[in-house]
Image (cartoon, rainbow, N blue to C red; front, side, top):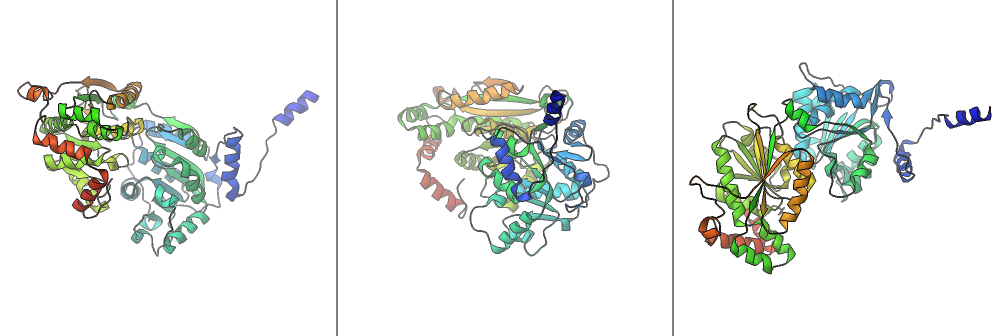
Length: 494
């Protein structure tokens, strides 16, 4: 009898109500005790949380893998908190919107950029649901979207707007207090792996939601914070296999190519003589990278492809685009300018076939027609950036009979420290199952390798352009910043 009593005691279920102001403290303490919490929201029986009038538009089609991801989240009128991992281009936004429409309670969507906020609003209103604009509040730095208006049942904002440390305007602080005071049904955290983990508690303290859904293309971070994000939000509910989606035609079939660009003799001499910081500047501004970009852009433009050229460093983005007469987009462009450039790039018969971008293009930009990416430089071989940039060309493409219908090029300066970082990136791509190859020659129409021209100095070796690029690489960064601000009328360098 004693054993049965002990067993009964062990299987007893306790129900404890926690003050809503203290639930994050309880969760933190549980994590410290290695007792992670599984959160479920009984939204079907929730009579307290304000409702949201929202229905899917007629004709809205959910793909089988999207439906499966939602089935892992919803069961018996309850919603589980956690992550859904889908490749870029696989429809994460529709999954998030479907979750909001299923819960039908006041909801918050947190994004990384103001451009993403605009895209989410457009997807909610014009594409997938019948939610009214009067029910939406877009909380952005420009107050015209929310000032002197009631807080809507659907909030769309950015992580920085929620976690802002500096003093807000009185109107902004009043809105934050309204957001804090409301009990939210669901919070959708877009591109959650990019958020600042050390401020994530702050997001959840401001937006107190019953259910938390993290959307991401990759649960990869270069720090050790991803486990902290999992603890805060919940477990991985579903992850799609991109290879399965590609084989079914839902995603493009991508060929990843690493182009080894020899350093010109002048640049290699400078590389051996300068500091570690300047070595990086030299491998980024390597003249043979410019030659490779020109070669690849001309080759793929001639075949009617749309091309994005990425660089974490702003100098090649500006210098190369100016030299080639192509459009560029950086973090200093205002929202209207960015949207105008993106609209031209998206238009099939537009003269904008190639777009140079800084890291502003890493996330939350919808460019379905891009089929070629050229990466001039990346953040020390960051796997996270690799996944984000690769995602820009994963949307399904025509060309069902060809083996590959999208191409991802990374330029690496040969015999430099950049080769070390490229190894980490290369391993990540191979581990993910992408087709990968290394190219050491780029042959022009005459059959000559552009890296071997000028007696092995490369296309621009021993030219005045090489000297100009060397000056740009070694120029004091404060001077570069000042010159760039003059060029852009005072825009911040970055």
